[in-house]
Amino acid sequence: MKSRSSCRKITLRALVLTVFAFVLGASMACSSAPPEPQETVARKNLAADYLTYGQNYYQQGNFEQAFRFFQLALEINTSVDNTPGIAVSYDSVASALMAMGRLDEARRLLAEGKEAALRSGKPQLILQNLNEEVQADISEGKLGNASAKLAQVEPFPDNQEGAALYQALGVIQRENHLEAQALSSFQKALSINSSLGLKQEMASNYFMIGSVQAQKGKPELAFSSVHEALELDKNTENSVGIGQDLRALGVLSERLGREAPAWDYLIRSQRVFQAISIKSERLKTIDLLIPLAKKLKKTQDETFYLKMKNDLLPQGLPVNP
Image (cartoon, rainbow, N blue to C red; front, top):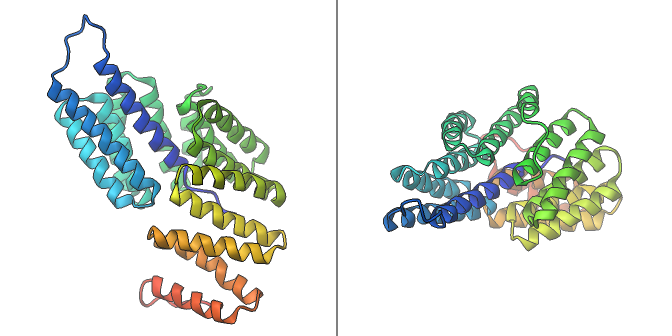
């Protein structure tokens, strides 16, 4: 059972909520401060809307469309010199680029976002940018770099930013086979997110808790945790998360000797990713369906999914049965 790449989705939601807080804060500033022109407030609100649209597309796995909306938010925030909004927008664009595998571009924008966050003087923006940098390091397997960056800001605060940092720390600990420490970090993140009522973030926490339990050889516990993640992802209509949850439940079901339910979970996972057009995730699920079809003697299904895999792969790459 592989790690889920949804730590970044947690951060995206935090970024969007943060920019709304700053927009509202500006409109409700103390009476001694001169009011902002209505046009400026309207443009900040529009930028916040674009960030929300981008986050929605991100949840659906449409990273290119998310990227476009995040770029629009960045342009608008830049046009009114909204420093907090600029910081949030840079980090959001970088998140979309990371999801598309464009890490070098993402790092360049994160550096810009860091400068804006420092100019803003807002601790939550600084921590959010740091978390994105850590995600980039984890994506490239630079766990030592990621761990060193997190150590600089420990202990983490008991807020949404702190929960995201605990989640990132848990991923590093899990990759280093420090299961007990990883479980503790994920549970701390879950506790904070639960107190804040952040269901999508809780889903990611439960998923990673399940991954540690599976790694420790406890598939029943892992199944229960991932099922919690599935219910929360359904509640928040997080399509990418739903597909990943279903796939993990399929893997765990097969490990528990429940081949028929495993087949059902994997079929549903493949259909989710087909519906939202994420080829890479479809291929991961199809690679699990093919051997299971052979195991269950579903010859026609095995042939069907071998052909599907062949159609999805770049031309010229052979399909290994």
